[in-house]
Length: 79
Image (cartoon, rainbow, N blue to C red; front, side, top):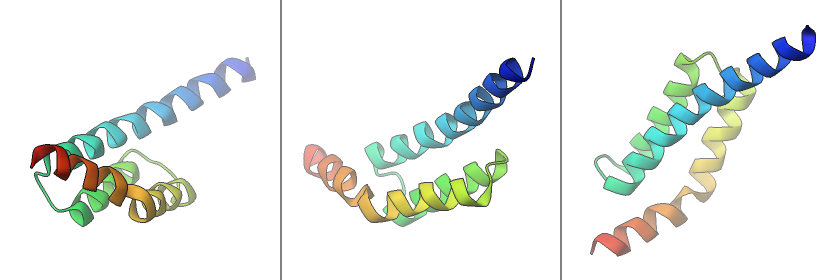
């Protein structure tokens, strides 16, 4: 039984992360807001979905450190 509960919790966390990640990717792709604001929205969506501080911080740090690559590529494609 704990195995099934563990899987359900993992899927639930992954689903919440996926929603935040897809929305973040959409904002990066469209450039609808600044990169920094897109990253803040990503963090806030993770927070609203119940993600713990450690996972929120890892995700936010990742997009702040490496998101410039995707951001730059999307801006070049739209130019």
